[in-house]
Length: 144
Image (cartoon, rainbow, N blue to C red; front, top):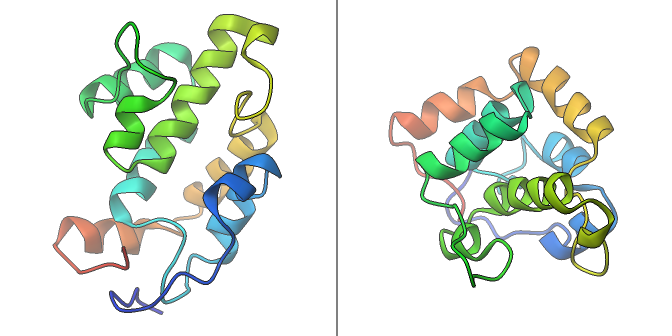
């Protein structure tokens, strides 16, 4: 099914998916919904991240999209300003890599575990999201 720009979101809130570590599975399960979890631009960012989740590559992805936080910014402020759930997830994962246990607590910690990254990587390698990504690049309207 193609995304329907007029379809309402019927799934759980992003903060709930992050808190319960169900985001990866929801992305996969709801991919064919009229209003999927992610649109093409976020799917492309997620695909690029999970294919190489190294610190250097993650920083490069954020930098290329103007999502690197500056000194004094709240965690993920730039990603949130661009309405990028995946950018925010990458920032949180980088924060844990950088600060270790100091980055843990309510609203902190990894957004995507290594198991979730592996699950998504396998899903992307099967080509599951390529049509959606290519449709977005071609200008197809998506659910917001």
